[in-house]
Length: 205
Image (cartoon, rainbow, N blue to C red; front, side):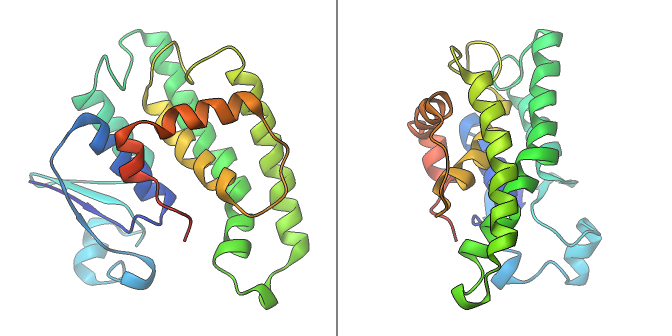
């Protein structure tokens, strides 16, 4: 029995759902977080003391932190597919998962919250502008990396494309001015054709 706790509007839940869908693993998703609540209930805190989503349960095993879940799924169920067997390529997947979590998603966070989840009259333009500028730095780096490459690592889709792709989805759908990045855009559109991506990446909310 595999259960994933979390609402699909969360970029972190999206990564876990995308990994599960790519691997064709059966699971039940339980709405939690945001308007769904649950994350401060004692039974949920017992699973994740951070009171955040996602959390995955698998036959009594409990795991939190979205990239830890993605790594577990990719290594345990997708070795040679979502997770490269070559140790250097595997290290590069790790590199991009860390970059997504520490640079890209944090850069977009304020612009996302201000333009999507904050009423227009309460938005802070200076906060949005700082977030957009930081996000543009990340987008420029990503675009340069993807020049001449079909995917993030090597020549095939890996867990790195899931993590960075979910962050790129959020950035590219924000209603903010941005520089067009052709390599990044082509890569993102390539990812969007995957059936698992369609299941994992809803409109921003």
